[in-house]
Image 1 (cartoon, rainbow, N blue to C red):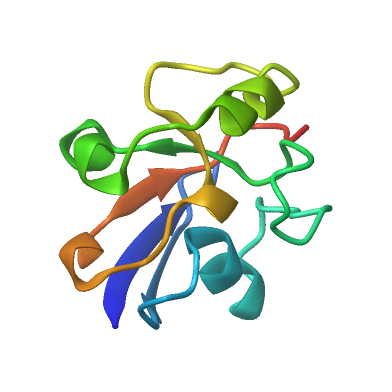
Image 2: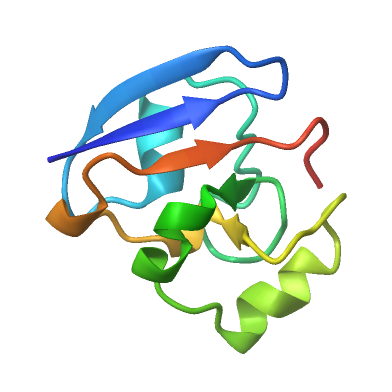
Length: 106
């Protein structure tokens, strides 16, 4: 398990224990965290699970693959720490991870 803090655009925080092996997106959806729509269900076929990874955690989330980069082209306000949360696998090393949601998804 890893404790992940999801921060909505308005600043509301949701700290959730997410099982290892799930994705950051699955943790949000299973716990009804608002702000992550996940329209494609985690298939990396949309950008509705876009998050901004806290800079201190960015390198620990792995690198973006070409498909994720392509999907981020459809997201609003992409930054250097933007990720699709469906592409971040939860590991014990991500215990304490902080992600922020954009104002709009997709």
